[in-house]
Length: 196
Image 1 (spheres, rainbow, N blue to C red):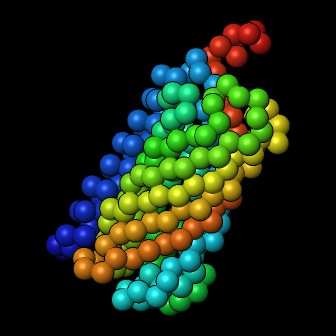
Image 2 (cartoon, helix red, strand yellow; image 1 turned 180 degrees about the vertical axis):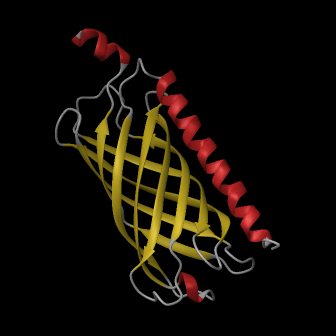
Image 3 (spheres, helix red, strand yellow; image 1 turned 30 degrees about the horizontal axis):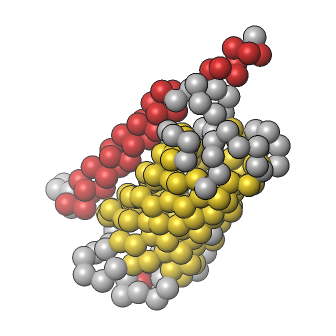
């Protein structure tokens, strides 16, 4: 059985997303002497305004995991893997995978004792349809939020993120997301040596 072209495009986008996650892991390892690296579990509502594509109309829940490596005092590189599950319009809406790579700018220096860490970010995502009629598309996203560190290694992340992409060519689709996350600071090699 001959597979549709969208199938091969989805696999290529998925491979690019996995390569981005591998790059993030190597970035965390390379910056292990620095503090500010964290992993995060997140979830939150996503609102999709009416579009010409009925399978993208409605409200979704976005949940996933990710992380960020602080590469310099103010700049970091993050990656996420998640899924969009429809709340409304379930008869035609798609469950969708989302892989993102996100450079970020932090307003608080890495070594600051402040509990708040405001951040803005923008990057690229692979949006992968799951199931019949799937397919994939590349998307641009931007947003911002704040990490609030309730303890030395445990925090709360509040964020807004807007994805824009052309799922079927022509008219763009927009997703406005409000994820809430629980970041966990990763220990640096220097910290582990001090504790030994």
